[in-house]
Amino acid sequence: MLPEQEGVAVALVNVSTRESDGQVVVVLRGVLDVVDAVSVAAALAAVAARERAIIVDLAGLAFMDSSGVAALVHGRKQARVAGGELLLAAPQPQVLRLLTRSGGSVTSIIKCRSAVTSLLRIRLASGS
Image (cartoon, rainbow, N blue to C red; front, side, top):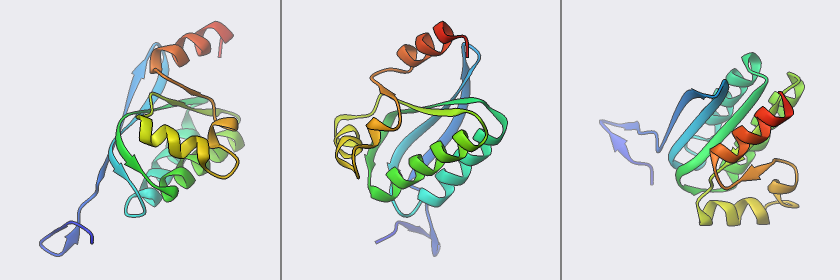
């Protein structure tokens, strides 16, 4: 059942962006499921259209289902079409489990690290 407020579905995930060491970081907090997957995919596509590299910070994401995984994969596809890359950082254990067990392991196609700072170091060292 969807949470409702005066008959309107309430978003379960918060999406924000910030810049860190010249890199765009998209921060996801809350619950990413079928309710918000389309809006998250759209937000990632919008960032991919203007930024070469996107780091998605998953530290505040308490839960994600397969539709959330699909949103991340779609975001990566959009980033690649635009000539960039989407990287994942700091997933909680239950989110990481889903990423590593989903359709051939999402982490085999999307680089995933335990912290945003480790991805920033990789990006800065490669000069991109």
